[in-house]
Image (cartoon, rainbow, N blue to C red; front, side, top):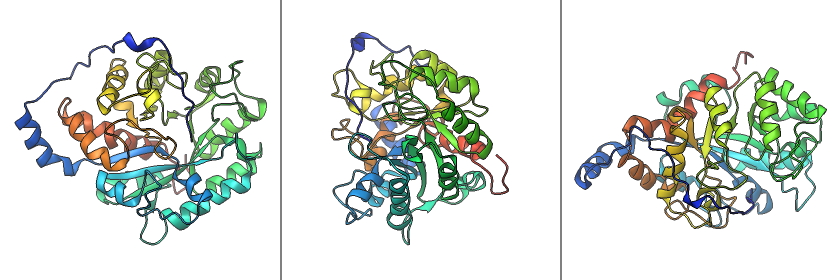
Length: 355
């Protein structure tokens, strides 16, 4: 989805030091990258390809230049898991269930069809990821507006393979308030019923875009950990879409996940950012003991300007080199892939019906 721009006065805030941080010489970095970079796998928890495929059915997912995320670029960047958001622009058209079905169909036919990505839906599949290298895709719903308050539609989404519900986009819907609503409301009664249904069914929840009041209400009500699929840290960049220190601590405490994102104006106040600027967000999360809770959610195809050096998923290879030059290999592997894989293997629903 297209994020909303914004800036704040927090450019002078520096993140606390990350205890394991160290730097290698140029020759050491070269040797390490040559020997190990091909082993590094990537999971990316947010892109907006499907809304583009729905709007322009002629787009070829394999290598179309109109997309940030293509099969060719996923392969080039070592991305073995990509989450595809179903996003309905509540500002441009009516958000109804028919449009959700249209994007699921686009995923089935254009992304996960013959010669495309393998579809990941179950914890048993997630547990086997390390043993069966392939490029896999998952489905999430960004904003439940199109469910129209109908839990039967939620059940249909689950049966059709959707595994994450983001409660809102930036504004209010029938379930809860989004982060840009001035009143900062929590959940409606029907929204609470949706949360209870998600807990019972195994549908996982995503709090990126949710108003702070909704975040804290969900933290109290939910029986399962949740994620922020594409959000950064507010202490480093003060955009309202980023997470407060309290929210970061809550996600770490519940064993949730934080998908650091590549939206330039969520990375650096003023909106002009380089790949190195992501490191401050990594280190800030780590300062709360969150190293095992970091992953990435690029928001590719939902943005029209990019972090320098992170313009598309093919750039993950260079980003991995940047991380390896500064941090221990096992930490980097966790951030790029392992932390996301562990969450899915533990919390996705089971083929045998257990959550």
